[in-house]
Length: 156
Image (cartoon, rainbow, N blue to C red):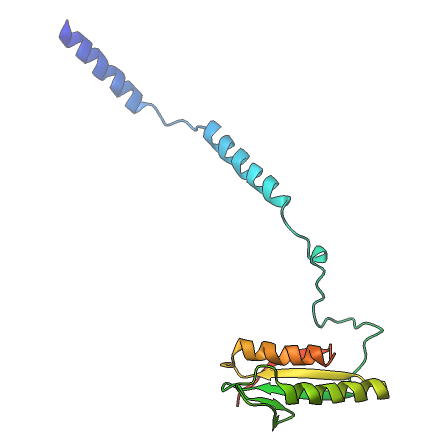
């Protein structure tokens, strides 16, 4: 009798092994629902670009209010911390407040307001220039009330 039971069990195992594999759709539906739930949750947290209140530079259509600058100044920030205004060295590399640069920028800004002209400042930083030094130059521009600033990477 024991032989029959073993023989019957092995026959059932042989029958299940010979059966063709079937396609299980329930796990695939579960995965699809999880992916769909993920995208529904993430769609609510996406910020639309216009909500960021950011004005990107450039573009094919220029504003009617924008105009070409009447004067351009070039502020160089060098690797050793030296700051130049139109190729002329300004303050010492260790001076964080940049008093000579700020005073010169103030004079330029006042002359620009008096003449109703428009100044464009370009900050040209060497690739190895310190970020804190660039921020010092931007702070000087802010103290002088020169709002139009562009950036470029200088070097040779």
